[in-house]
Image (tube, rainbow, N blue to C red; front, top):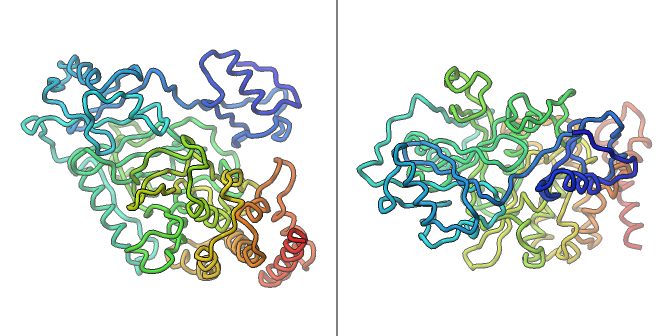
Length: 498
């Protein structure tokens, strides 16, 4: 579709124009991608010219709702349903598909995320997290729930890059439960969210999700990406400083480096609450296979990350940030600063309830952590009021316990030959976090030093790195360079608190 874009137009202006021309494509549904990058500010900042081709990625509509029904035998059917209809109406729609083997209304039990749904439940109310596609599981009566052995049709196994490392028990249990679900014939369910291939893995009952699988070859801009994003021409990922196909490694690294305040990683969640994550090999015909469903086999197994599915009430996009506990926002901020996260937004922070009934924030989607540079660091929590509250003593003690060298050694022990540029990022971001809290800076003050105000204006941390680079000889050691970074950083921080 040809579209006139002025040099001074903001991306919001462009999206508004698309909304006006294409009725129904609201701004909130749009993502614009150019040269492999998601556009966020002004068209001129990205080199958009008169002959440029922009790719429009759309989030699905909320109304009518597309309901995915999965039977216990693995069949998948789709229904377009009005948001205002209830579960009882959906059951009647299912019964009309009698020629496809669906049971009568009285024999149906509908489940969503493990919860049995009452007939009077309104479908729009079930969709709390804003998804336009919800996954409902259909449970047949016992006499009809005959499941064939599907062992030869799937593969899922841990991929240990260092055989000397033993998987935590929580990871082993997650993999075992995922395999049990596949053995029962419960197929992976591809989600409509995100820019890569993401599959929800079911348990043996087919009533709950156990884990989330993200294959490397289906990442954004990768060769088998199901969202049809353009291939990367130079191997660079959707965020600068990352590489296509390395998202799974970073997902695992995020879990490994989310240390608990105390106790074993096998028994206790990390400080930030990153879900347990492991590298696996997996095959299923549901995955986006280039050979097609009938031609692929277990020899075509994909490598990717497998992350525990966390029960949740939706994402932070659905709730005003004022409702979030300060310590929950702070744990996310500590993690993101340390990992130089290039993709933290409200949509990849889930909300849930702890044992005490208080709101808990769950960070997910860490494929753009630990980039090779700081160009695309993005922290949405900078704009939340909790970010301007000082860290608690408990959080300060945790920050002071962090050690970048031990973290790098841990990643290497687990089989990741950490690139020098990535190791440098981790060292510098950890240094900034620790020096910042020494001066009683808030998450907002520290985080603002890592994020650009505009696309073309370097962040404070980038300026510090450049200053250090210019002050040392070309053949200087990494230790000499980091010492120069430390000195430049301290000068900048001291100026900030004057």
